Length: 401
Image (tube, rainbow, N blue to C red; front, top):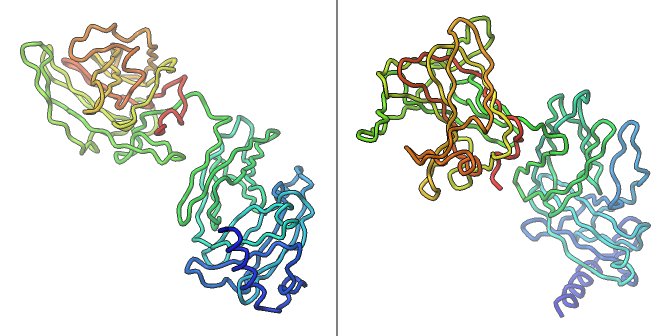
């Protein structure tokens, strides 16, 4: 009954005009698909261009032609109506973009044969952003959208952007990456920015700490992730004996600890010195995953970092948050010299076995639900540390699942 009423309403509205639309009178209705387009305020979208293409159409790129051609173009009449008499394909798309509004829909040959009618409302357009991970030797990728003539080229880092996309649930995307083609789908909401990343060539490592900026030490641009660290810094000592376990005051103003790396290394590094007595420690920490959604980093093959200094350091994975079983897992290293940088490599087997002392729950437990990574130094230690990289995990392992 609802479909019949809509059909009668559209027929009445479109038939009220005898204006020629794409060369066809809107008065005639037999074996035709009548479409009425309205703005977001429900007023008729008069004199707007509607482009109809094969649903398999993508705009050609150099050296890669799909052979699916453009189908037809219509202009709405004063009542916002167009009439489609036939389709040369089984499935087509209709796309309209007009002054910040738009629509994208699929129509079928069967709809024309039935003489169906419909009303579509335009909505505020959205945008698409993303990153295509580029394999070695590939300098850029092409991004196409099925059913449209949208075609963009990524930059040298694989980033792309596409504006003024009508809202649609299930755009088909086609990525041409060197000699490979990757297809996936995404939805664009009205007035919203959507991120669509291609993970097919995603690296199996991620730099989790980089101290080039005091405002942002952990950052994955394509996922919008960034975080600034916190410290229990120089001379802020925490007794680790069972008799006295103090909670340190944590500070976030850590710019003074990010210094020139020195000793022949370019860029910045994190530096601090603990002059605490035996049994005390201080630390730097950073949130890498949300408390509400800890990350599974158990696939980590190794943790590599560069450091110089003297004393004892540990790399710590933690699970924090009131909704989680809090705890940590840690592995120790002895710093060799302050005069030159050394590459250190820690593997899961190097982490201290679970003993439940001071929250040590072991690698098997904590690595599956990590929220923070910390660097701790003990007793009399001075350290410069830089570029902490996890191998065996990917950037996408850090997004909320």
